[in-house]
Image 1 (tube, rainbow, N blue to C red):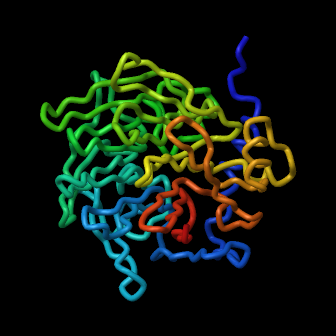
Image 2: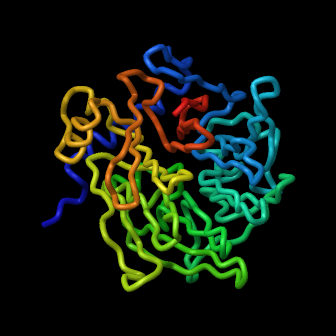
Image 3: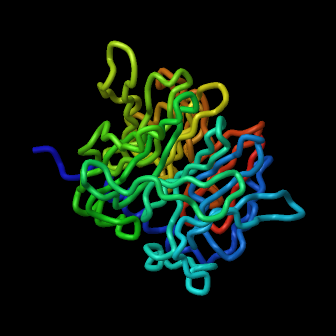
Length: 352
């Protein structure tokens, strides 16, 4: 009988819970990381994902109180760009780090600009798939269900800039983001990979029965998607075109939970590995990541970079410190790595 959870489930659970216990701590020393700085957030936490607009400005981030903020540089700092609900109560929500307020305030996770239209598309965990124009403001709701089944945990997205089609994930049809632990404890595999067609306004389901689908990214030629299936500790490849269209294969097995996936300008994929670094540090690496660690001379992999064939061609080394102990996304942009987290009160930045 197949076990309900992967063998390293307990490690996954402990490390997911641990960051929530240190939200009130000050950022730790970053002296162990070269070319690395932290951009503190204004009261809020959780810069889960990044977006850069069609002029290369940003990043834009979604944070814990439901807002989307834009980085304007060291002198001006962060500025509000958009919100994901017209009913959002500023008195209640602004500055909130309380997950129980997320259903009212929103929790934007996946972000991506359509470079052809300059519109920002947003996967909000509670409000579904949204879009806001280049001037910001209140985002427009595009979709909240598929095949009659409401979204419960809209998570990540990517866009085909040629067609405008948006690929995105719903991590569960049963549990909301604030109930993420139940997805793990109950072995929930109701997650879906979907496509939004901006011309017909329709949502189609590409894959269902997924265990906590998370990050998603298109290949450089738009022939396939890579999808992080966090509950099964693997990255899937879903073919969109060619003789293998609509078929799925394993892009890369892992021994830890993958989070967001972002493609760089070379068509390579950065996969955030947001849990289990403590396991690595005590030498309990399994076969897959032992090979990666040995090849790159580190036991502390916070993220891995893959080529289109699923080969690891680079890693983000945490150097044994706490700054990168909860990495949700790595975005490579103009010679820098922008490092996000679902719980930290800062954005990490590192020169490539």
